Structures are given as C-alpha cells and as structure tokens.
Length: 415
Image (cartoon, rainbow, N blue to C red; front, top):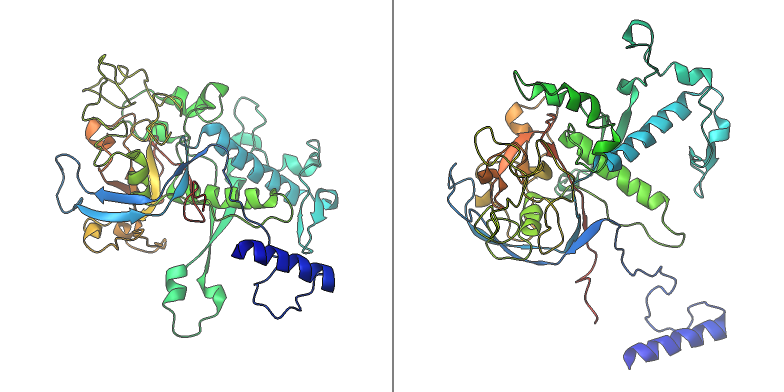
C-alpha cells in the first residue's frame, strides 16, 4: 500500500509541477537510473553462503596452511570455464589495434569524442593495413623468420589501473587521491615459451608454436599469463563492458580475479566439505572413468583423455555449472599467499591481498593458485588444497577465470 501511495504521489508531482519536486515529501531523488542487475554471458551465479575452509581430507603439507574455520561469502558471478585462448585473443587484438592506430601519423579519422569530450578510438572504422606506419611495428631484417610478416609482440603493452582501497581507508594525512590510484603497464601477449621452459629434456616445441594461435586450440584455456596479465584482462573486460553498455544504464561492478575463498566456495558446488568439485571422495566415477584432467600416475598423462590441456568445457561441470574447477589448468586468484593467513583472516568475505612492488622481496610476490592442473597429481585437485606461484611468473599449467560481485541480496530475491 505504501509503495502504491508513493507511485501515485510521484505521478501527481509530475503532472502538477512538470517533474519538479515541490511536494515537501521525502521521496528521494526521483530521476535515478533503474537497476535490474546483469547476467553476463558465459558466467554463472554463485549464491551467498557459508563455507568451512580448511583441509577436507589429509593435509600432506602442513595443518597450519589449511587451518579449518567457518566463513561467509557474498554472492558473485564466475566464468563457467577458464578464459580460453580465443577469449584472451580478443583482448590481444584490441591492444594490437590500439597500438597500430596510435602509431599512424595521420590518425584523426580513427578517433571520435565521447559524451564527456574525451578522445577515443572509433572502432567501426577499418584499419588501413597498407599504411607505411604499420609496417614499422612488424619484425624487421634479421629478426624475421623465413620471410614471414609477423607483428612484433613486444609492442603489445597495456596499462591497467586499480584503486588502493585499504591505503585510502586507513589514511589520516589527507593524502591526495592520486596517491591511491595505482597503474601498471604489462605486455599482454602470452608467454608461449613456457611450453619449452617448464619441462627439461621434453619435446614441446609444437605446443609453443601453435597453442595460442592455432584454431585447434581456440577453446582451450589460455596459459603463459602471469598474475598481472590476468588482472589487466579483467580491467580491460570491465572497460569494454561499460563502453558498450546501453545508454542510460549505470556501470557494472568491476570484473576481477576471484579471491581464494570465493574460488574454494564456488568449486565445491554447494556441497559441504566436498573434497572435489563433483562432491565425492573419488577421482573416478562408478564406471572407472576419470573425472578431471590431471596426472593419474607416474608418467601417465593420457588416461584421462588429454595429453596436455583439454577444452575448457570438457568433463562434467559441478552443481553450480562450473567446468574444470579441478584439473586442466590451475587458476590465479586475487589473494596473496601466507602460510598462516587462515589464523587472522576475517570471517566475513575474507580477503588477503598485498600489492607487491617489483623491488619487494620474492616472498611478498606469492599469489594463491587453486585447482591443480593437467600435470599435477590428484592432491592438488582437491577443493581445499592451497598452492602458490610468484605474481610475475608464467607457466604452461596456470590460467584464470573472472568473477563479478553480485549487487544485491540474491539473484532469486523476489521481495
């Protein structure tokens, strides 16, 4: 009844005063944009809930690394698969085309002004690939191989930004806002040489040459990306979404990497203390078939159906609809790694982060990696198992997927 009265009162105000608020009633700002939420393509909703973190089976490393405790997680969206080569290639192509446009000397035809007067690339305009300025961006002379016309990927640099909310919240010196805005430039091209570097005395050159570019691997998870590159992709994805959203709608929350506890909560698929994403205690089903892409025995990589990685949507998803939360490739998270972090984390949306500088000690640059990969034994596939890697390191067995915080109580909230 109160809602109906408010609607009638708003209508009366509009009719009698041409939309001006003159009633004297406290109605809030009346011209606010409507928000019905979003359901991003390729993402699934993970509802808010409670999670018992810690070892769901024996902890072969150290009980202090996975100390059991109860936490609560806010609802969020998560990519149903790891980011694939073709999805990441969209980012690489965007950066490549941006670099080309900015390097063309007479490039006014490629730019327009947005509603705020900012100069931005007019993407529908086709690039003139015969322009002489573009040729300077290709490998030249002795750097060419077999006479091929190849783009110099060292030019594929992208600057992403983030805001240091912790520093701003604890600042008591009226520090200028610009001090909390952080920037980092990264080369976004995947490190394809990881296929050679990760394995001694092992013939993997075909993977190095083909994995990121050949159509045969389009739907396979991207690898050779470090933690910064994954964050740059998430930042670009947010800007790309907002730049193409319908007019008169508000920006969405930022795409990002999931925290390690969001990842663990999502991987269990709603099953309490599930040791694996499918909920059971075994790595095989009742027919003896392996349920993930990993290394089931010494020197045995093929029994599960994949020699290296497999398609990002291979095997059955968990009960949230998430594929390959165990195996295929391990996944970067937002969280910094500390062996004893479970002892001091808050139980409300726990978040352990540290923005390590290039000059910081190596131990400060450790980021949590979850899920295990195609070359790992089954212990690393368990939902509670924690592992880490340095943030500036690329591997042939680490990829990522994005998360997006849900704004509101629940996607199914009808009240």
